[in-house]
Image (cartoon, one colour):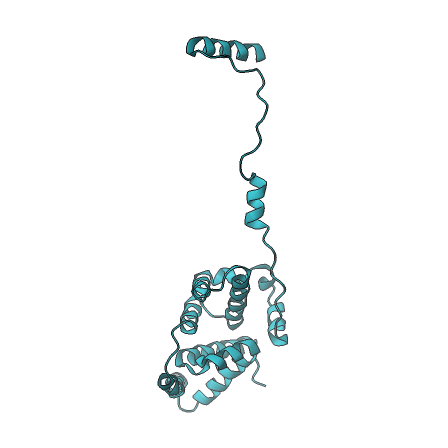
Length: 205
């Protein structure tokens, strides 16, 4: 095979001019990054530090084996968390940590993707006026009365507060932003609280 290759090379040189190439061409130095270097840049990212969780939240997550295997961020990929963080100027590992936190909170509440996206939108909207925020509690009360009746809305509100209070981080955020009084947030929290009570994940006492 080697002799045949050389003869063909010599024929080519005779036809097109020039010297026949040497029988052995030494390998050249790789140009740019190797495949291993590219893969390392893509996948060998520094791990996020362990998340410090409130005791009740930690117990809740440990009781769900699937959450030990699958990332919460996967199911809320379409909720707009990444874009919201980018709009706020949060990037890199800090953004990854915030994304993990909020996706985890949404999973703790068992929110569907639509409600999660709605909450993200509310959390990143322009700061409402004082007048707007003042009417939220009354609007939230009306929303609960419509859904749970005049005799059941107070219990629904208490359930919502119990659910939110399970995670002090969430409670603090809702208090600081005033979103804890937003009628949509109250309605979602009340509904998720009822579902958590029915499934045994939330206790009233």
